Image 1 (cartoon, rainbow, N blue to C red):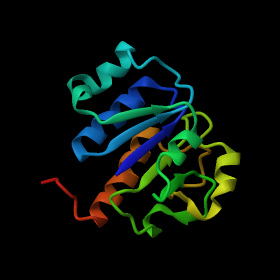
Image 2 (image 1 turned 45 degrees about the horizontal axis):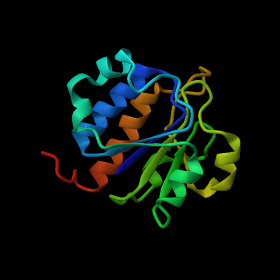
Image 3 (image 1 turned 90 degrees about the horizontal axis):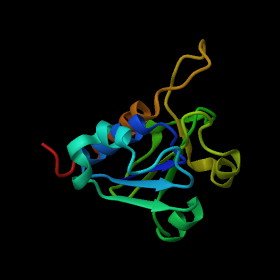
Length: 153
């Protein structure tokens, strides 16, 4: 599995996602302008001793990532989608794409693949969404559950 963060802004979120990726044998792909330095002590504190075990990659833009992984499934997670993340039949080579904490994924990106946009159900009473690290964990563990938790105990 692959988790993609496009322009993440909050170091502890990315650190927590990195830790989840390590513990699930998932690659982390960081795309675009990051809201922090990868050497940032706050980022490393969130992941702490897990960073040496993380398979991670950086890309200047989404198209670079996409072109390097043609033929793979990309799924985009947004509060603006109609379909639920549980409607996907995941494979081990899938890319799970999440946007930045304050704005989510860019509308231009979502409009390119509307049939590949999904959401996590939340109450409509409050105009907020799940924390990015929580959203990644929810989707990633559903994908891994469908695959019978490969390589995990």
